[in-house]
Image (cartoon, rainbow, N blue to C red; front, top):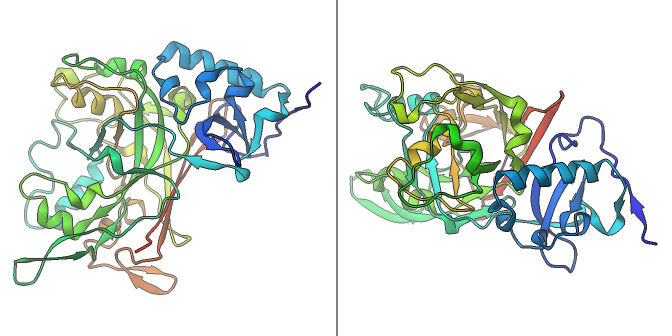
Length: 390
């Protein structure tokens, strides 16, 4: 008779039975597989549920099954977590390697924070309007590079590119203004066919879950090349995704009314009950907390982002990732990028007694987040971690 164990959840854990985020992990010497986190342990779903769908190197096979399957599996995992599990189905988080949880299809990055957009407008256009005329009418975004989405913990190589010089002409070299963007990512589970927009009220039918994102930015490369077509090499070198995917259902108690939108959005961006998310982020730079961005202030909702992303009939597929853009609040300590925190490099941040503006080689940034959990307390969205290797 095989041995069985019961997982004990430490008091105050952000990974209790009301959360159960998914991941892809590798036990020592074994192939990758899908797990669900409970406390400081992982449940191997292929073993616990006796289902080969979870003996896969990504969540995609599961995600493509659609919302009814997502709900059924979540209930099965909750039931299993309350009982004793086969010892072979339990691994400590500390003993495994965490992989990129999803095979990324396409990647879209938005610009949905009014506080971030206003701050950036004031930095770049101090004598003009902070917000461009279209900003309050649509969720501004751009298509990024899916192939450079990497899992948390992956070292970041400092990108090279063209940079404007004092003469006005460019040179070529490593970015001197390497930055972060603290964001929240949304993963499409059930795709949509070409020519069929997704309505705002159909969000839950398509989005599987959320994960933290750091969309690294080379501000000097970006500033020179992004005229007139927008982000390219200054953004495409690396986007870090958390290893933990929080099921959308686990954030039911984090939904809050969306801040007022003025003017009223066009009909395709309206929802019966517009909602945002009460998620608090924290940014640590070399271990020092430098920012606490609040997602609850985001102007455009996740549902509006998805609706606009598909409004022209663009298709979606399992594994597509779209991110919120930098999450910022109105106060300095709520800014989700170093461009804002240092006000374009003119107001340095004191880090371990040293005045700093942008990232240097060897720097490490860790972004974490919490949200209200179902039934009380708070759940943790894990972390997204990255170190600048050079």
